[in-house]
Structure formats: structure tokens, C-alpha cells
Length: 181
Image (tube, rainbow, N blue to C red; front, top):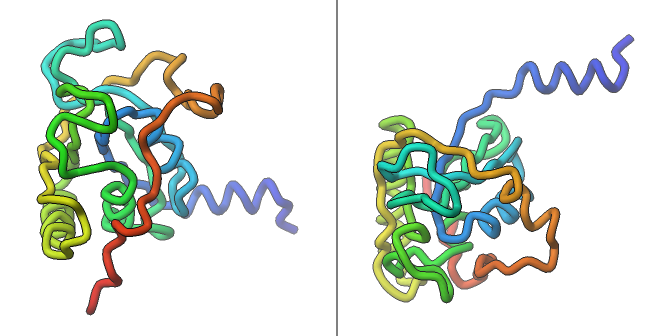
């Protein structure tokens, strides 16, 4: 007889996970919205795309505020995650999200495989071709380097501080139409 805990253990054993590493401005808001997406297993906030060793809030150099998203590839796709990513932040503003400015809030996709790179480029082309966004996408697509986990205080920040600020929200008008096969 399989009990509930055995069933859960079995589910976890067959889950195939991959990671998506995305920067879309304030990582608190990006993390909070992604954690609710189907197929997302876990998220953590941190820093990517820069040269500073061991970046922190106080000294992050040229790194971007980034969210590492672990997802079950049987439940969602990288393309689905990217479509949602482009819906919750403005990928058409260089080094800016809401009232925040600077390289740390740039839009970037840090790919971990050639397949992710191709998917990112195709998704950006579809976003640009749709005419739904206010301009052309300026999101950087670069190979993932080290991911530096942010301080514990920043992890799950909006869960700990529900009144906290965010400039991220799903924009209903920024949704790509279903892909034709």
C-alpha cells in the first residue's frame, strides 16, 4: 500500500527539473510571481551577469538582480516561462524597471544550454513581431555564468513582507497569441 508520503516521494523521483535564470528588475517581484506558476518547483534570488566576486546588496558591481527558477519540464516549458517573463516586466526599457534605473535592474536571460538560447531568441522575435509591447525588446541573451545567491533577508522577501514594493505584475495586453504548430 502506498501512503501519501510515499506518493509524494514517488512524484519527486520522476520529476525532471531544469533551471531558468532570468533578470527583470527587482528580483522580489519576479520571484513572487514565478513562484505561483504551474510547474515551478523552487525559486531563489541572487546576482548574475557581472564580474564582482560574492556580490551583495551593498556591493553588487555590474551584476543584475536575478531569479533562478527550478521547474519541472513535464509540467511547463522554458518557452512558457519566457512568455510569462515578458508579460510581468517591461523588456523594452534599457536598464530600467518602474522607477528603478541602472544595470542591476536590466532585463536579461542567462541561458544554460544552446536550446535555451534558441528558445530565448525565438521568443524575443515573436514578442517583437506581435506589436503588443510598446517597443522592441532590449533584453540581453547571454550565457549563464555564476549565480550568486542573495542574502537570506532577500529570499522570499514579499512572502515575509507582503506590503513590500514591486513594479511587477502580469500585463493582460502583453500576452503572445497561441503558437501555431
